[in-house]
Amino acid sequence: MLRASACNQARVVRALAKGGTATLLTSWAVGRALQCQQVTGPSRRIYEYCRERRDPTLSRRLDALTAIGDYAVIGSFSVLVGGMLAYERRDWKPLPLLVGGVVGEIYLQKVLKRLVKGTKPPTESSIGPPGDFPSGGAARTVITFGTLARLLTQQWSAPTERGAIWSIVAALVLVQGGSRLYLGRHWPEDVAGGWLLGLLVLQTLSEVDKLISAESEATI
Image 1: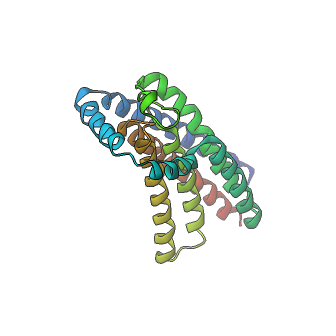
Image 2 (image 1 turned 180 degrees about the horizontal axis):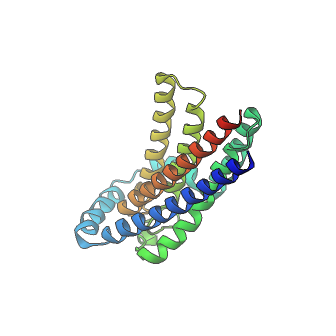
Image 3 (image 1 turned 120 degrees about the vertical axis):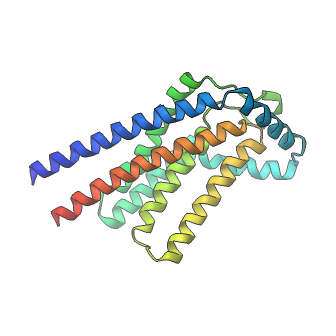
């Protein structure tokens, strides 16, 4: 049993290393490609279109919704919900998956910002502090709520339940990411890059979850 556990831990480490490397290289390559004039030209026009038609009332509402992806909100949410799920299941797995996803995104985002060297929107046209590539808030929203959806659909596995859960997650991701563009805090390619980063990290966490679940079933 000890050998099996050690072997599975090695698989988890390899999955994390492989997934982290693939995430970094893919996001870096896409990020650099998105900095070309063929992308930034239309992107800036979209940005200006949103800025010129910005509604003050909608902006105030979206300013609150965009905070879904902030470090403080996502971090607290991950610890709280992860702890609740772990306690309910008498299983430690949800907590490190949720917290680990946020921690992984933090370091990957820092490296990508140095490698891609994207630009920030003008401060005067941004409601709130502007950011560059990739949008960390967009990435964290995908990672956290995507991981939570995966954990919940393991219990609520009926097609209608799964559909409802993933629909809610998709809506949250779209609203949060779209709010960053509408408020002028990110260029469109930054939000797309954040979604890509989030999906790649989520894929890695899903592989780790499968490995841990397989070990748990083998020991029963």
